[in-house]
Every structure is written in C-alpha cells, then in structure tokens.
Length: 112
Length: 113
Image 1 (tube, each protein chain N blue to C red):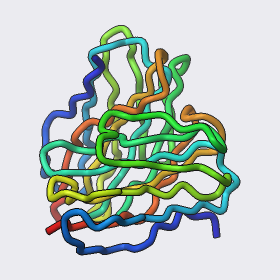
Image 2: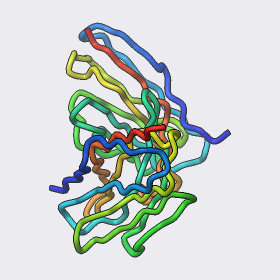
Image 3: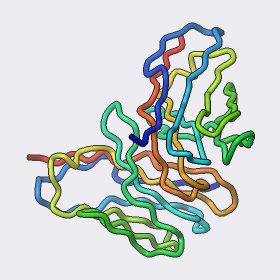
C-alpha cells in the first residue's frame, strides 16, 4: 500500500532563507505528484503538479522536483517570506487506481 | 469566478440525524472528490467521481454516501452520523481525470454530538 511521508512535521526558518520541504513515497509507480498549500482553517491551494514523466516544475519562487527511482519529491522555496507560512502537503496519484494519497504535511513558519 | 463551493461551512448535529453536505463547482470539471482531514491522520479520500453517474470508494468510505446526478454537484450524505465522523471535510474537483490539478472548496467543519 502506498504511503506518503513528509518530514519534518514542522519547520521554522528566518525570513529570506531558501528552504527545501521533503516528500517521500513507498511505491514508485506513481502517475503524478502534487504540492499544496493550506492556510489555517482554509482549503488547499494547488502549487505545482509534476507528471511522472517530468523531473521538475517551477512557479515563481517555487520549484518542485520528482525522483521516482528514489521515491522522493522536494519543494524548494527561494527567498522565503512571512507570507509563505502555512502547511505544505504533497499528494501522489497512483497508476494502479485513481486514489490520491496525501502526506500529513509540513507546517512551515517563516520568522520575520 | 471559478470556484468550488461547499455548504454548510459549519455544522453541529446529533448522532443518527441524517445530513447532507453540498458541493458545487462552476468549472465544468469531470472529476470530483470528497476528503476528510483529521489531526494526526492528514487528508483521506472518502469517495470520488470520474463523471456523472460514476462514483468510487476512496480510502475511508464507511458511513458515507455520494451521488453524481449532474456534473457540477457532488453531495456527501451521512445517513446516520456518529461522533467519529466529526471532522473537517473538503470537496475538490479537477478538469479531466484525477491527473489534473485539483481545486479545493473552503471546507465544512462537522461536529457530531
């Protein structure tokens, strides 16, 4: 059974630093992987979607990579800002079925 | 404005009293899905629908029903709610199949006493 893990569960970094959030999955046969942002009490906002045939996707200060062979995806945030403070979740869609498996998220706090 | 709407946003009810949470999207999306989010357990998929009249179970379907009679709506039905269904519920949709970017509703916080 596919498992998606995000470590650490929480992270605090000073404003302006570059940072990397990690997502690992146990079954490499994923179809795509998506990164989301969730603000407290709010719904999820899609950040980046990487298809299995892709290695990375970029949007502004965000860059997501996918390495199926190692079962890992990373979300790189450049020049972090206090407004980046939120919980970041990754979710994998499997080849074998249409279920979506979410990680439990990394709660990010950018210190002003 | 393209969006996914859910109603109600907050609901407190009692055990056994049937309820429906509505979900509607105005983007002509084919794929719709329901999730619940619980502390320590993260987001788990309840049911999903690839298109009208096509629904499938997710990871935690027990105690829930859904229907997809029209493309824009995907209601979540709790026939006999129990306290362990107290949770934050999200509806989501995407353009084609699940492969596409998902758009989430604002969430419904349900408390079952």
